[in-house]
Image (cartoon, rainbow, N blue to C red; front, side, top):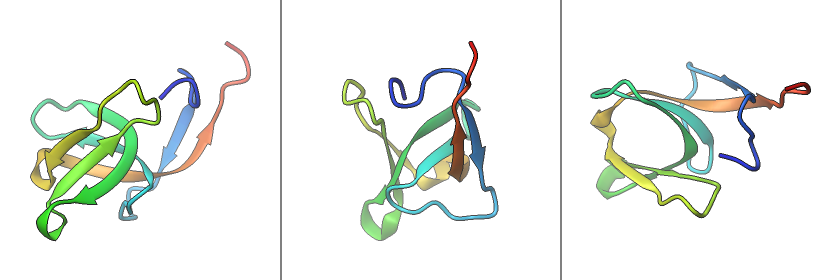
Length: 84
């Protein structure tokens, strides 16, 4: 999510909260175990599709059915690293 969130930022997520449209989230895919940091949007009939959007316009949004995720946690804090 560079340049807004450069590599090395620390992200604090809240696992006991539900993600809402427009939230930044950390999500784990069930099939691959891959972890994604993107902007959350629930779409589709009955909200059954999750659309993950990048802040960087060079990257296309990703869409998955709700069942494709092991978990999705809203981000509540981001801390930039002061020294690299």
